Length: 276
Picture 1 (cartoon, helix red, strand yellow):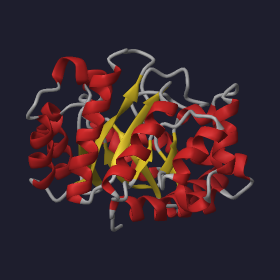
Picture 2 (tube, rainbow, N blue to C red):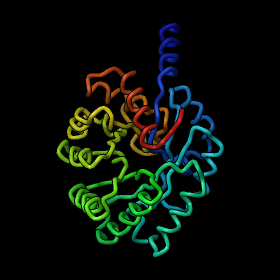
Picture 3 (cartoon, helix red, strand yellow):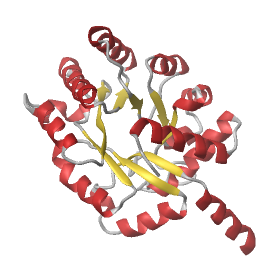
Picture 4 (cartoon, rainbow, N blue to C red):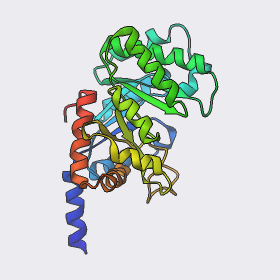
């Protein structure tokens, strides 16, 4: 048994995985971040993209990225924070921060969330401002979408029609139907699956994970949220658990874990301009 476990652990280490959405600056990671890092390294995670909920987090996230060479990051304002924190100069602030550090590889997270907030016009205005910055800097956007797929599709299509400029980005922690998934694939977006893909009753997510084209597939933990099965009962998710997401996606797609790891790593490098 010991030999089998040793061989499995070394197999995992040989697989390169990229966690494309983490929040390591949250207080829950402060006591043991070095140990968390050791576990993601043992799990074969070779790079992480740290998302940003609000620009005031920038210095915290930047500090983590300086400490851990395998961490890149984004800057933006989460749609649920728009009502309280958006101001007229924020787009310029996000742009300034984005160009201040070469490890910034994306704008976001931005998007629309009509599940917990109803300030639709304000969220759309903030999203369009993020798109403007991302287009100007030629960076991808990290998109949060909850119960807003139809309106998000309209906004993104209108943006393209009005500006005739390609929008690169990822639908993060995706939970849409296969039909909605195809909308955003047609717009050129990558689709990223989190621990929710391992949930037993997540039928739409399962179907979407199975049908995404191989060159648009990404993986994430969205840690510390949404721990995957078999870690779902734990209070904190962490990057090492990305292997459970990868394994479930491979199962749904009837592909090997190694193939999914290799493909999603290549895709993340392509979208975010990473070198590993």
